[in-house]
Amino acid sequence: MRHLSHVVSLVVCALLFGCGAPSGEELRAEQEAEIANTLLTITDAYNSAWEELDLEKISEYHAADFTYYRRGVVQSASQPEFEQAYHDDVATQITSYWANATDTWVEVLGPDSGVVAFVFRGGVETPDGAKFDYDGALTYIYERRDEKWQIVHIHESAYLPDSP
Image (cartoon, rainbow, N blue to C red; front, side, top):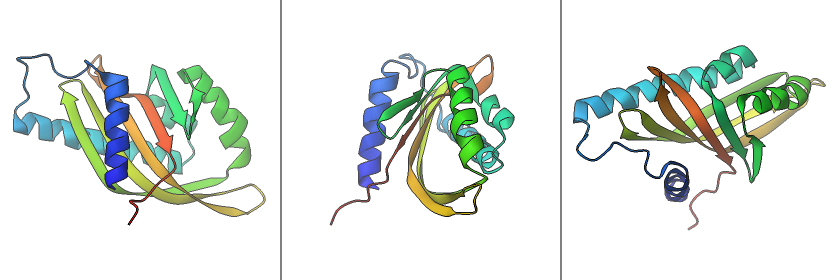
């Protein structure tokens, strides 16, 4: 898990440098806890939408300028690109998806930004009935825009457990 924390820290620094709370705008502990709980609730709902393979529900959580970086490749650089990739890949190659999140980590960066990262283990089933295990580590970067929390970036990587 230590490796995931380091990866998450690097991703957050690279993507959100300067996006935290402005100086003098410190969050109280209860505000921070409320934001963290909100982000975890949204993450659970978003992941459930994936288990339903419901593109409309999935897309509700994304900002228009949402980006998805998957295992070393920019999968999509906008919401329309994501939807096209979903239609080309997920909708044609997967009939079911399941995942269990573990080792969840939340960082509130300010009143309008935060990060949720976790390890997931799950799998997919293809139209011909074949099942494949699938696991990795996911980081969701959230921003609150117009009073709505939205995912602005997802980074997915292979899960690399700590070495002995």
